[in-house]
Image (tube, rainbow, N blue to C red; front, side):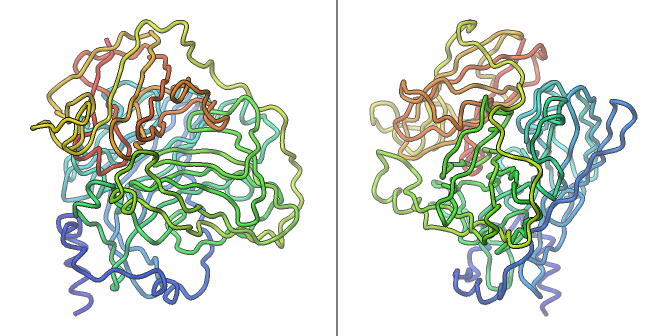
Length: 499
C-alpha cells in the first residue's frame, strides 16, 4: 500500500499540489523527533562542464526523483541531474557556455540563468519553454565579473511549485582578480555554498504545497529549514576562516541572519560582485533570490548556530492580519562545528578584488517608475475592478504584451515604489544594478555591490541604476518581477525588449 501511494504521488504530485495540504503537516516538535540527530551538511556536486579551451558544455536533465530528507522516508521531488536541486555550475569570465537542458518531466519547464547578462532568447524565461521530452540549447558568452548566480525554473504560472519541489541550483562565475585574491577559494573546504530554503512536510514525508488564500497572498512559507537540501544541517569546519556563499532559495521567506553568540562577520559580495571593501556586521537580511558572500572567523573553535531572527517580515503599514500571517519566528539555519578546524592561511582582507565598472547615474537617459500593488486596492487606497490581484503599474502579467522598450548600450534609473502592505523582492533580468537610495537615504553597506534583486518595503521607494548591454531583440523580451514566486505566478511581473 505504501509503495503504491508513493508511485501515485510521484506521478501526480505537481498536479495535486493544491490538495497536498489535506494531509496533516508535521509540527516542528514532530520533525525534531524524526530527525533525531543533526545531519552533515551536503556540499553540492561541482559541475565545471566539458571544457575545450574557452568553450564549456553542460548537459542538464530536469527530472523527478526521491529524496530522503528524513531517515526511512522517501519524498517525491524534482531536481537537475539529481533527485533534488542541481549541482553547482562553474565557469569563468570570457568562457562561452553551451548548455543543453533536457526536460524529462511530463509538463513544460524552463531553466533561467538568474543574474546573467545574455541574449533574451538564451535567458530561460517563460518564452523559452522546454516541452516534455525535448532539449533546449542555451549558448552565450560570460561577460560579467566574479559572482554567485543561480538557475531555476521560470515556467509561466508554474515557477513557484517547480522551484519549491527542487528545480534550482547555484552558478558560480570566476574571473582572474577573484582567482588571484587572498580569499578562501577551495570549494567545499573553506568556500561553502549554502542554499537556504523553508519547506512544509506531511506526516508521510511528502512535501506540502498549498494554494490557500494566505499562501497565495503572502507566499509559501514552511516551518522546516533546509540547507543544500539537508534538514538540521551541521557544517564540520575544516578551516578557521570560512567563506559562505549564502543564497535565499525560498519561495517567499526573508531571513534575518545572525549567529547565536552575536559574533560579527564580514560581507564581501552581494549577488553580482564584490563590495568595494569588506563590511563588518553581526546581522544580514536576505530576501528571496538574494545572495551574499560572507567571511566567518571560527578560530575560537566553538560550535555556533547561524539563525534567522524573529521579525515582522512585512515592514511598516501592514494590516494586522497580514502582519500575523507573515510573522517569522526565530529559526535555526546551520550549525558550524569548528572544534577540529585547521588554521587558515587567509585573514580578513582590507580590500577586495576590483569588480566590473558600476553603472553611473549621471549617464542615465531616462527614469522609469514602477509601482507594486496587491489585493484590490490601487493608488490612493481606492478599490480596483479588474487587473488582477498582483500588479505592476496597474497591470498583471500578459505574455503577449510588451510593457516598454529599452535602448541597448544605455543607462537607466528605475524608481520602484511599493504601494502594497508587504515587502517585495524586485528582480530584473539581464542586468546588474546598483542601489542608489531607499526613500532618499543611502542603502546599507551590504547593498553597495552589484545586485539583481532588491527588497522594497511597504510604502518604500527604492531607486536603482543599470546599464543595458549591447544585446538586442525586438521580439523576445526580458522579465522584471517580484521574486516572491507565488506573486510572480499570479501576475506581479512585466516584460521589456531591448532594441
